Length: 71
Image (tube, rainbow, N blue to C red; front, side, top):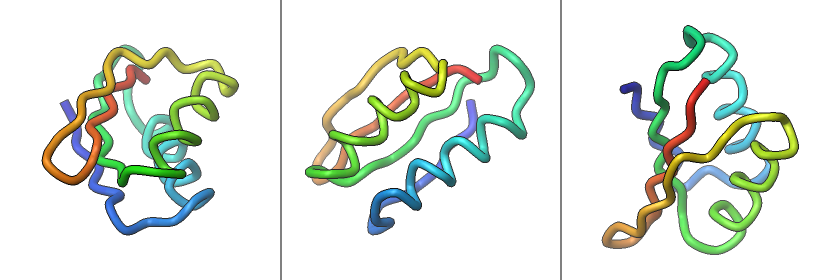
């Protein structure tokens, strides 16, 4: 599993960085993305779904969310 910490990264940059990382990964690898509450966790999963990715899990943590998606 690869982790990508995007806390403090605004939209749409966090989506762009997530998509770029997924494109660099081998098919089927798991990416764990750390996103802030609010707009990032509301927008990034929907944008990834529209781009054809499958969201495996979204887990709330202390002050951020953990998004898991396969490449």
